[in-house]
Length: 312
Image (cartoon, rainbow, N blue to C red):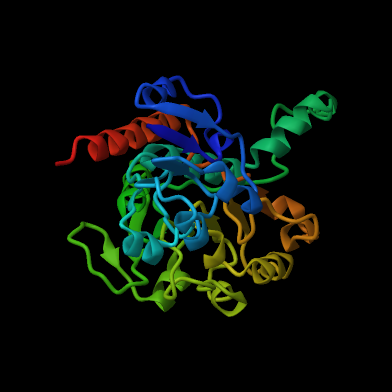
């Protein structure tokens, strides 16, 4: 059985790729451009893709193709309608990155809230050595204990973030863009109250018609001027140009962002034009990518292939 991984570099160095090679003749392409897909998947029975798009044309050109494994949760890179028509199975992976995303969410939050980089630089540049007292209070911070921590999207990752927030002593509330009510101990709020009362808002919702461009300038303006906004979910939920404007206008205290509408971001991206750069912390879509998370992902892709092989 021929297995083609179109963008293996998206998983980096993981210790268990042998699970995939044990299942068939495995070819790993570091990355694949759109015009290379058709050629590269010829003769394959199984194609693995993280972000590379597999189109109707590509599927029709490969009569041997029986299974597409998405090395991620979202399947928007696969023409699902075409796959169904052509009898090609599509399997994704869920739940592999929950702990990783939750951990990075708080790494970003605490680095932003506590001005970690600022204080590190203050000491290493020698400024602290010139100080006459033992401490430097150039950027004061507040505690999470007793603050209202808002979760936008209470799925598996949102719930894990909520549990950690409670461990810090925060009051957890949530807003459901879909309108779904959950059987949880956290209070559900309507959007206006959610925006107006939360000290931290952390986004963990899927990108869909209900969430796209949900947080624009007008809605960010409803937030507390001391509030912090976190997004480790999907870039399109926050209007990026509006967030930059809101930060420069001091509508909120700061934001930490790990996801973007276009990835990688262009050099002209609004975030890179921000005047008050200290108010924005950026990461290159890494929240999902702990070594444990990527190892679980490979294991579950292998399980999906084994499931296909052993079906009646």
